[in-house]
Image (cartoon, rainbow, N blue to C red; front, side):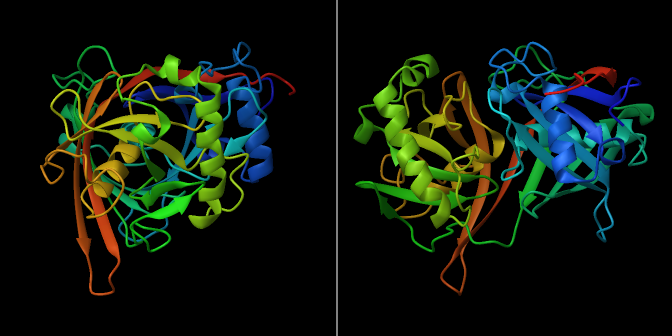
Length: 353
């Protein structure tokens, strides 16, 4: 599978991320062998990822593995892998809502799903979380359409819109509490498709207008946020997260450009230049829960969509939350993304780490 003949691979932009998409049948089934292969494919560990497909940033060092699903009513299974840039670490502890946007087109391109003339519905099981996503891909003449007139902040130009609806039956608040205290800070631990920790930006001397580079350069700030993340992981049922990229850490502040809330997302050591789909869904769900961190500084949190501000614009997050009879909060999300096939061919992994 990883010999001189290379491996079939499609490089795609999904939302504001970029990743390598594989059929499950083309990569090892054993997780350890698979992860070792992905390190060689992406060029990790190396800050430049000079000898692989990776783009030297967490947003461009991602992998999607897709297969036909055996689950009733589900078309394909999607496993997301985050390949750490500068460490020999591959994590499946989270999913990626941005790469999710490319799963439907990829499944049709690889004929896992039969294309229809006009639109093709695709039901996706997100293996990392157990959630199910529904989407419809434009397929005029049975061909995936990537060109369109829809723009998303953080991506130049326009492309074909892809709507994603994600829902699950797990409570939004892993601890059952609207807020907890960690390392002297009030936090909200929430998971509406992505485990995140909501924090008040002003408690960390952050206004919400800072650039990602400026925040990354504050070593005391990044160390304090990492301390909270390491304590939050076990409380969220994630165990020891010292070698993981979850939970994501979100600094929240009043909106600056007419949105619902301003965010700066630590993912976890780098600061996101925009915001991930499911990160935005978790933030939007959190600010709709009375008493959650950020709910008191949000503006129009119940609007549909809620515009979640980030360093390069705003993400329109459409979420619904409800408190059920058991007292727990539950949520679903709908988002519009775009995706584009960049190349389709054969990748040749470096022969050894």
